[in-house]
Image (cartoon, rainbow over all chains, first blue to last red):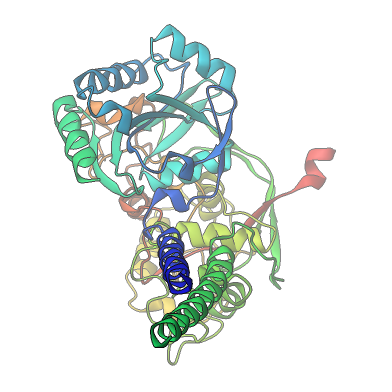
Length: 191
Length: 284
């Protein structure tokens, strides 16, 4: 009886040791989850990017008052979303990050999400401050410039990240939504 | 009984090894926290800052008719040096060569340094630091309570020659700069060995290229001297930015470099200097 209990505890100990080891697995050095900036989503929740860990991410930077290219980018994101299989969708987050944090408050992002029918759980809108926004834009190699108080020029990029926050692909310019949707599917399968 | 003893030993060994592992993990995790921490530890910087009154200037890219206003600001009279950057990484282990995350700097970060805390062999402590990314430059600036100059601020200072604030219209202005740009291995020289410009700012052109805070605000494709865009879909509202001074070839070189950079790039002759808002004037 005694040695059975020792055996039992040994097994438990061994198992718990293993678990600890797994937890300590570090993020890849090029993961966006290494960024420690603070963000707010459309529900006014405070979060860091590593909260998004575990899902395949489709990321774009826009601003809600944009009248030129952003509506196209937004519709491309919706188009991509519609092409992602419903089996995959729980493992995907489609993230729209504001480049105009002064105007794009969480409330405004919430309204924008509602108006554009992007209020399902897979949609995430993020806003922060200018420093974090600039840092994130640079992580995406995105170019942008404020050309008036209400207008920005910016590059049109949609990026896909895997569940560990590593960049998988970037589409720039005339974005091929089918290609992005295919990349998302492969990334979900690989993670 | 023998079996029981045997299990006891296994149990004790396991318990011990497990504890040990946990200890190690704890040590590791505090190290990781330190290296991941977003806090930038301050260091002291002993560099004179020069007051630049600002004013309106014609930016190199943009509409011809629109002048850009540059507010008064302070700028370091010289670039950040090797020894200053060494002090920074000593105080901020996250930015040491062996700890740096790839997301913040590519593989050539501080390339020639002999170790985390040793400058390159034969490097002059007073030469400008190079092989630093934009992220690293930003962090350094924060550690000395400053920031990087904006592109407009930098270019405003760069309009000056030794005797005038705006030498752009002088016929030899661009040529002289190009001659400086063509000198090889100029980044290994010490700072402040040549004459300062009109404002008292040293080495604007003769040692290194310099990071600016918003280097990524140049929205042109690789060859856009005509201001015509090959691919309009690349940028939202991109037509607001095209070249105004097609004879300023030196400026073309700077802007070409900026458009080709990514924030984690580290390059042999790319360093930086810091700037600061000036509060005194704003309060008047």
